[in-house]
Length: 68
Image 1 (cartoon, helix red, strand yellow):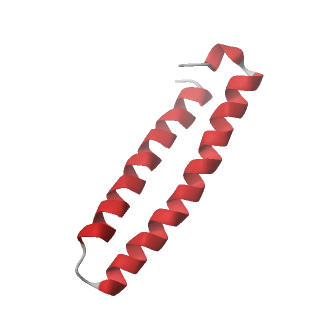
Image 2 (cartoon, helix red, strand yellow):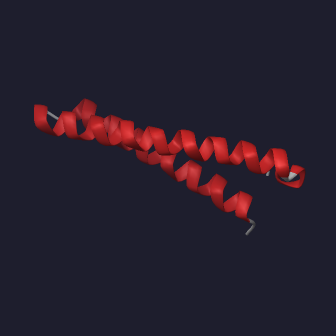
């Protein structure tokens, strides 16, 4: 597996984690738990943005990785 595919797979996993945290925040009855899940979701969202940027950089510098 190439670096680009590893980063893309990681990005996909992070998106799933972000979705799960959002769901936990929405479905939790405890206000503290909601806030904790929401904070974690926002932190993961920042990581997701960084990975998305990295994927774009990989594709820009290494055209063979585009779309893979």
